Amino acid sequence: MLFNLRILLNNAAFRNGHNFVVRNFRCGQSLQNKEQLKGRDLLTLKNFTGEEIKYMLWLSADLKFRIKQKGEYLPLLQGKTLGMIFEKRSTRTRLSTETGFALLGGHPCFLTTQDIHLGVNESLMDTARVLSSMTDAVLARVYKQSDLDILAKEASIPIINGLSDLYHPIQILADYLTLQEHYGSLKGLTLSWIGDGNNILHSIMMSAAKFGMHIQAATPKNGTKLSLTNDPLEAARGGNVLITDTWISMGQEEEKKKRFQAFQGYQVTMKTAKLAASDWTFLHCLPRKPEEVDDEVFYSPQSLVFPEAENRKWTIMKLVCEYGTPVSNLEFCQTESQMPTSLKT
Image 1 (cartoon, rainbow, N blue to C red):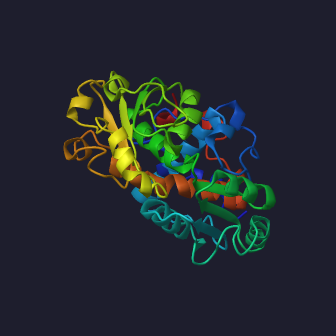
Image 2 (tube, helix red, strand yellow):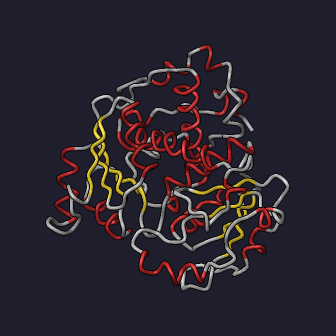
């Protein structure tokens, strides 16, 4: 094994506990099997149990504490390589993945549409086989979910969804870690989605119920796959977390005028927030446009958008450890009795 995390667990400072970010994480019986997450693709959170997702969040918080707060050096990915396919540009996904993978001692390889043309000058099957022979895992940010499905089917290494038209699981993991840090627990929170019925909302719907969270969503009548209400104020009423996203995703630029008309009245403002719960917070996966949320909310003390952005790094670091290296079968908390007191519910 590259790096024995059990040795680190004997560190006295760690054993004293840390309760500033990781309250109420618990690893249950389903996580006693070391091999449960090893080598699995992450295409959507639909395929993971609540305990498995909680385990990912707990270890993300642990990495964040050890590296950021304690200054530990953890070369967990030394000698490992990550392929990064980016059909769509991104500040946070690229920066969090590259810096996180390098911080753990690995080598990330960034591949744009100028470097690799998925399914154009080489079949997806051939691309998957070549990448499998040269890298330990692949994070792909693509237009079509179907391309990810083919890569996962043909590759012999794990495939991580960095974004597709249907799902954005790595963003949701960062969102949940941010809310866990702020509220201390995810259970019972009401998530108020105000915006497009897009990949973010799909991913929330695939996972929120696994933590006992409630969803209130408002989307325009624009042919999206989900439309629970068309009234953003109704969706915000009583919500703990107000969430929105871009109204115009990459590839939808021609629909800009039509979409702006459809989203009239959907800007998140303090008027929206007044209907939310008294402890409301705000999330946006960025980049943000003023028409989606005004400055008063976006830069308010209740806004968690910048901690949310940072947590992309720590959750991705956890994922590449889990999916790209032999240390993925090492558990920080094999049983609840081994966990610091501050982490027990």
